[in-house]
Amino acid sequence: MTAWILPVLVFLVWFLWVAACAEESSLRGAKKGQPPSERPGTSVFPGIPFFPLAFWGIAWGVDRFVEPWGTLTVGAFHAVFGVVLIVSIVRYVREIRAIDSRA
Image (cartoon, rainbow, N blue to C red; front, side, top):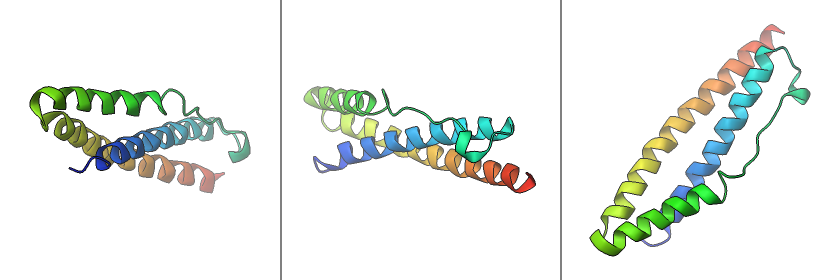
């Protein structure tokens, strides 16, 4: 894995995490009957920048002893986590649209 792929993957997945948190928060507002303009959002902090930097640092540290296992492990975890987050976002958006279409 080239040196720039892991940090891009890790930051992308944590951006997805922020989006999933925002959609979940919006879904809770939709279930309470709030109009879209009044539904709560979420903060990107600490998901960005601390979590991606921490995982990138963990991968770097493990790679110092048993290269490339830190990069592979952190990369695989984030690939799976990213898929789970995409599924969650799609599910939340579908539920929100279903609630909004009934209103």
